[in-house]
Amino acid sequence: MELTACGLTDVGLVRSRNEDAILLEPSLNLYAVADGMGGHKGGEFASKICLDTLKDYLTRAAQGRAPLVGDLDSAHSPLANLLGSAVGFANRAVFEAACAKPEWRGMGTTLVAVTIADNRVAIAHVGDSRAYLLRNGHFEQLTQDHSWIEEQVRAGLMNRDEALFAKGRNLLTRAIGQDATVKVDLDELELQDGDCLLLCSDGLYGMVADEEIAALVSAAASPQAACRELVACANGRGGRDNISVILLTAEAGKGLLAGVKRLFTEG
Image (tube, rainbow, N blue to C red; front, side):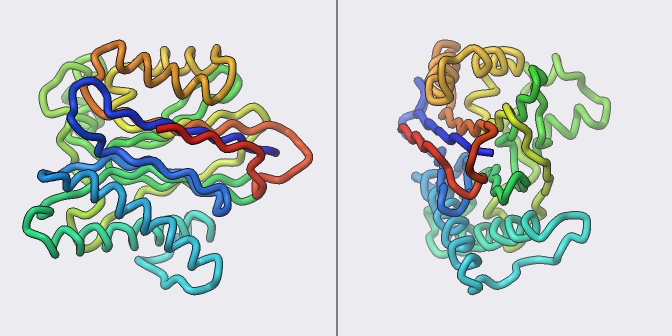
């Protein structure tokens, strides 16, 4: 398999600054989207600290110098556990930074991250940034939002259509940096030829329906064109939030996923 990775982040049409951040690090096979929150630019710092720490931890892990954070999950592979440990370490970094400055108190960020070894993908997430899989025309949400709205839907107190217009859509039940420790949701899958993995913040899926996202990705001339068109569509609907997207496409080739053939980063 060969992997093509591209990403784009955009401030949108309403917000004065971009508190989202994206990470494309082919040397580590690491890709992530973070959506920051907090006053006085706290959100910008939270998302940046989170992704910088995630990258630093996995760089040190590759050198055998990263301490385990949290408990091992026997239901998941060492790859997934390593990513979960990295997220726990990033959570601690954001939490300690928030405690260090009064103007950053309460800042935090969502996070969805993937790391890849051979054809195995590990996914970690906290908050309501999402991972999707487009496979053989089927578009599936892989992550489950840590939000008040999602809890209402899971409890049967609200249906999906009602959730689209309900108040409190931005209320998170879990986020990076809110406490010294955080529960990280992990998932794994085997990549197949033609798979597309999409990571995004709520600035995309909050403005563009899942079916439209799938159609735009499927019809786009290239992965980087798909990223541009997704952001343009969200802005065309009002762009009420920052918009971030990373698209990973897998194709059968001579190399393994450890070597990323092309990397396009915009924004």
